[in-house]
Image 1 (cartoon, rainbow, N blue to C red):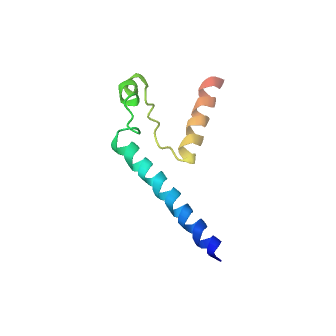
Image 2: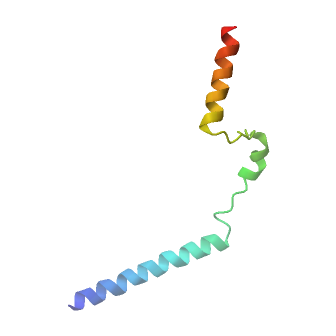
Image 3: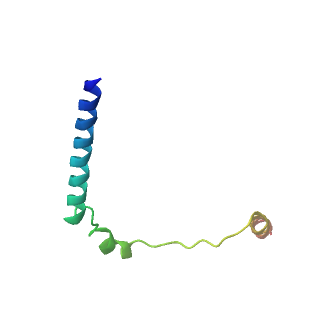
Length: 69
């Protein structure tokens, strides 16, 4: 039974060490993204209109009619 207490203490200690390392790395700016904002303007965002299925069917019908003529 005493082994469980030892393992519990060790696991809590390891968890605290990893948590401290995580907090330290966040405070030092390890996870800051300095690259993406500088390249974001190079990519074009395509805005697609929200069309429901009936509007899409109507557009397909119009396209097939115009190609058949």
